[in-house]
View 1 (cartoon, helix red, strand yellow):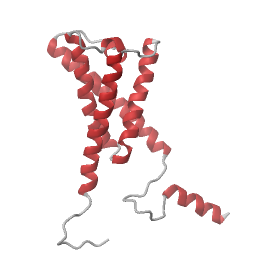
View 2: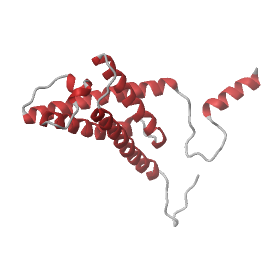
View 3: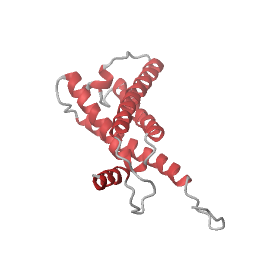
View 4: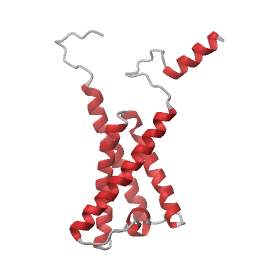
Length: 172
């Protein structure tokens, strides 16, 4: 019994020293909370970007801009504004991921999860699977830019904690 408890504890805390910078802990509550927070911020900031852009230009605001794949096209000016809002939102999402997740290794996972849940929301809202080529291109570009920017921000933060100067001694 005691041996199994130690085995379980060591699996959870990854207590063996395998050259990792940080120990990882499997915490499903934390992961689900981060997903909910990031998805909420994703839609909040997208709504803010769409509202600001629509107010500046004087076009109408609609929930269709967020969830209908037919709204994402570059043939007319309102479609270009929706595309611009999504691209700006990818940058906002990268900043929120930097603030909430703070781990470079998890940025791709969370970016993919955000966009996968957005795909499901669009599918549910319209009742049909998004088939627009421009919708898929935009979401792939936004996923990539969100992931790369958040990885860059997280990496800068993680590297800041590691002293690199040779002249100073550090106590570990």
